[in-house]
Length: 104
Image 1 (cartoon, rainbow, N blue to C red):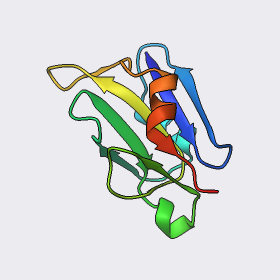
Image 2: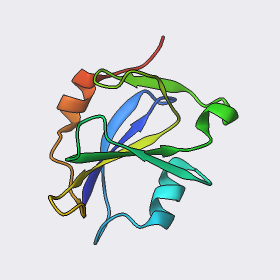
Image 3: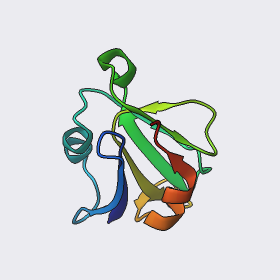
């Protein structure tokens, strides 16, 4: 399954791949989080996973144009099918670059 990793420290947006889908353990490891939070700024077709404690940890922020608040720490974007299951993201890295901004 293909996802997109947004890293506000490196100011990078890149594809990531997981064989058979991202497990909760992989998500925790990829964004270095004890607790995960899931939200849907692109509607129910894409899921964004973040560190639930990122603000408390003082992690670097970024913004997504279609979401009304800063997002802190690393984030992973992957897709959702009509039944709510996980699938590869339908977004491209280029599309996410157009929607994401990193503070100076």
